[in-house]
Amino acid sequence: MAHLELAKAEAQAIQGEIARVAVFAAVAITVVLLALILAFVGASLFIGEWLLGSIGWGVLHGVLLLIAIAMVCVLSAVGMSRRRIGGAFVFAVLVAVIVGVILGLALPNQAYTRIGDAALPGVEPGVRPLVVGVAIWAVLGLIGGLFASLGAKGADGRILAIVGGLLFGVVIGAISAVTTGPQVGAGIGIAVGYLTWIGLMALDIARTGVDTEAVKARFTPTQTIETGKETLAWLQSKMPPGTGS
View 1 (cartoon, helix red, strand yellow):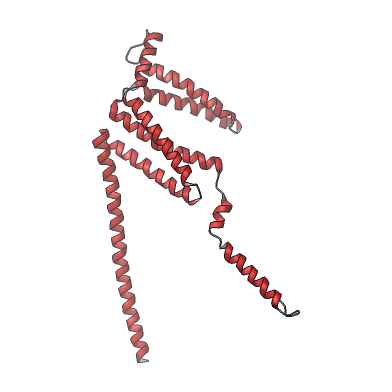
View 2 (cartoon, one colour):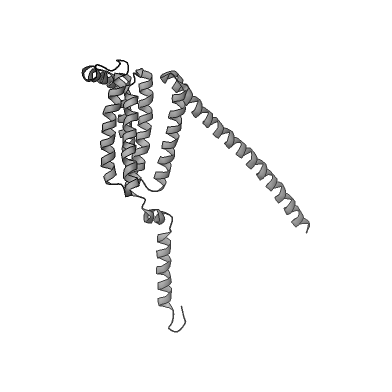
C-alpha cells in the first residue's frame, strides 16, 4: 500500500508538471500567433502607405490576400490540383500588371477624352471622359449580361444577369475614366489581381465540382479493409465443414 500511495503521489506531481508545461506552451504559441498577425498587419499597412500612398490599400490588399489563402487551403483540401491553383495565380498576376499599367498611365482617360472631343463637343470637357467611359462600358456590360442570361435559370436569374452586367460595366467605366496616377493605378491593379485569382478559383471549382468519392477514399483505409476481407475468406476456407463462420 505504501508503494501504491507513493506511485499515486508521483503521478499527481507529474500531472501537475505536464499541466504547467502545457499552459506555458499554449501561452507561447498564442504569443507567436499574435506576433505573426501583428507582423502581417503592420507589413500590409506599411507597404500600402509607403508604396501606394494610403494605409487603406494595405487593409484592402491584406484582406483579399487572406481570403485568397483561405480559398487555396480549402480547395487544396478538397482535391484541387496545385497546377490549377497556380495557373489561376499566374493569370491573375498578368491581369494585375496590365490593369496597373493601363490605369497608372491613365490610358483609358486619354482615349475617352479623344472620343469625347470628337463625338460630344457640347458636353463639359471635365466630364466628357466619365460620360464616354460609362457609356462604352455600360453597353459592353449589357452585352455580357445578355450572353450570361442565356445560361441562367428562370426569369429572375436572367434579369439578375442583365442588371448585374450593366452595373458592372458602369462601375468599370467610371473607375477607368478617372486619372488615377501611378500609385492609385498600381493599387487598383493589385486589388483586381487578387479578385481575379479568387474569382478564377471559385469558377473552377463551381465548374468541375468536388469529387466526393476521391475525398472519401482519402479517409478510408481501403487496403486494410480489402486485406481483412481476403484474410477472413482464407480462414473460412481452412475451417472444417460444419464449424460455422
